[in-house]
Length: 241
Image (cartoon, rainbow, N blue to C red; front, side, top):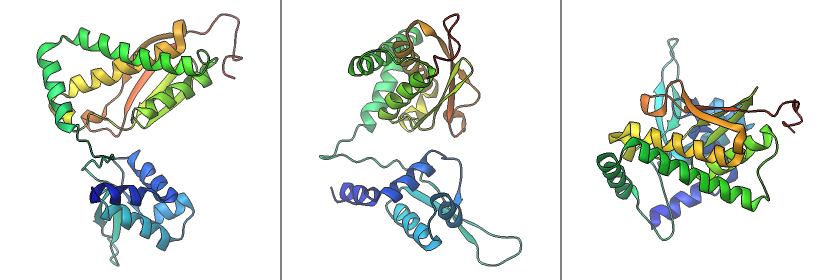
């Protein structure tokens, strides 16, 4: 449990946690000390201290960028490939997740998997609706509700409204490691869960949720999903309030 204590101590600092969250949301990018110092308004020495602590704890990995002009090479920081999880008392669910995905892939039809995951998303959306006294009114509030529930699931979401579409970016695949053997299944689970969640929160205003572009499993830094929304006739964007 010393490892768990170290991890929690490193992330206890608010600035350090914000730096880690910023890098975690951009897993395909590398950052120099000056990049982080500028982004967070820190002195480079302070930024370097935070990055070093995150590296020592295993949250970040480093590399070197050499300049064609010579001089001192720059150290670059990126999200570590190893996943750090901690709980007290410790729990390890990675093997269970791997076995569960293998069992589902062997025994369940894709349609059944999609239905079960949509129902799970619908239940979580229903809980949010019950806790907040009704469905969110307006597209902006719908986006905020989707973001809040997806955040609680560890998806590091970014939810943006564009015209009559809800664009959801999943910046963390919670099945990245166990899903390596079943990438299509992992994507189906996430997509179906979000479809159920958005349907529960948006009600009849929501249509199908479609994947757009590349995905994390294909090497992208995020998965993009688009949900078309129905807008009641005659109500321009009072709905956006």
